[in-house]
Length: 133
Image 1 (cartoon, rainbow, N blue to C red):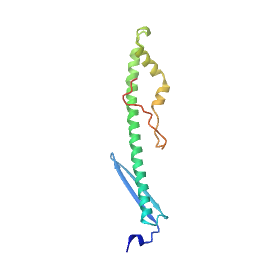
Image 2: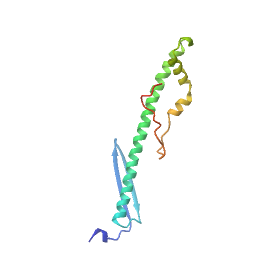
Image 3: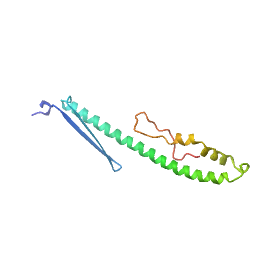
């Protein structure tokens, strides 16, 4: 019997991906996918969704890594500013004064610590890990 001659009432597909010791699984079913071609399209949709989940995981992991890096740099900068504030203001270099201003500017930190929640319209804000304070 030819597979295209079979009557298909319902179809289910499952696609699994493993990345970075994490597993992503997408299961789809349809009662309207009644031909091998439509089932294959269902499979492709599941594969695209699984690939998208992996890509979003990578973005979220990078964002978390940047946040950790930002927190450590923030702590280091805070310690440096404490030492700068012990100096007379007239003895501070322009760079030191900029660091003091930067730490005082809380809006800077809220802008840097964006939260990624798997929105499709989220875009990287192009902050490099090597940004200078």
